[in-house]
Image 1 (cartoon, rainbow, N blue to C red):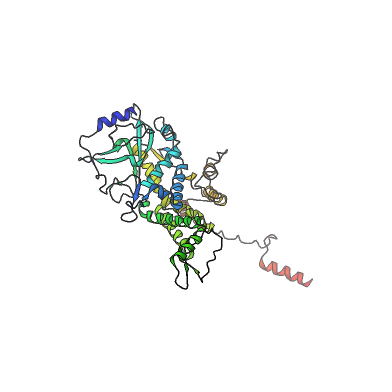
Image 2 (spheres, rainbow, N blue to C red):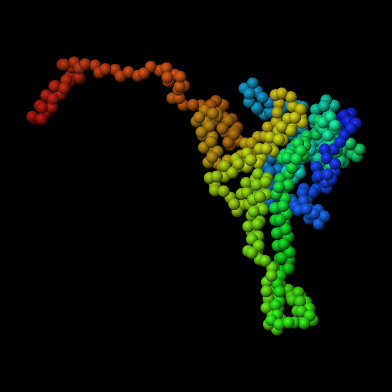
Length: 443
């Protein structure tokens, strides 16, 4: 990291000011707090934190699903060829960091951490490390709680960095110029340098669902016995009340209490049906999934779409949820790695959208029959198979003709029938045929 520290110290500005004073509301005032679900929640120790949000199963499922799917999708270094097509390639300067971004993570793990930081914080900060040539040789995802964006009076952007031993940041690093940080952010509704997590919108539902679960845990910890009253038909002394209360509280779940004096038990605790716990839980799951852009069937397996619509659901998940993050990562890496023309980065979506056998077979067959794909291309795209002899050429049937040749083709003519020879046995006249029929009839 010596090269980075030298770059930082050489490019620091003398006048640097934060985008908003700490605690003013422009930035999160307390590390780890996402938002207050109601006024005074932080003072009551009831604020929604990242830890409490991830304890919600729907939130955890959305975050792990999106991060896992992006992490498992290969990211290729591509180059624009002479035909204007992006094809996978390699480069000694850029390929190594795309294979192993740092000393402790594989690239899939690196992408997962990148996306998780972006999902739950709205921002992902990636620190670049360079060699003596200025080429990026390592990438480190930083903890968002140790990063603070600074803006100088002239508009120059810096990033104040805390201590991160994994990233090689010791104490004493003041700020890094924007050229040394990849800042991937989304939902920048407040400030162009401040991303907002979906938890800002669905945090209340996540906390309500957590409260429902806590209530259920407390309920079953006392044996599933709701609160209630012992109602007496007449006035009872305080000594009797205290004695019955102690005896009632000492009873274990499942035991029968005998009180006498005409006492009747009256339940005052709401049951699950009256509280509509299932409906409230389903509503929370749908709201959380909607804020993250994940189809609800991916979060709640009981709400699976019809089998015929499974591919449509996958395409919806790709276009409305994953694509914005994948495009952001591609653009951020193209700019952050300073890739020259004609290089770029691109996710291989074929590894993500893997169709069932019948659909893959039909798609491969149609691609080959239409001439859009060669057999080798169809084998590779839909089955992951290698090339075969003669399979590198697209094919079309011979009867397919260009429209201009069909338009210029002369109209077909029907030749006239040759005249019949009177005494030719091979071509008898109608009269000869009639005479022959008459002779046969007379016989």
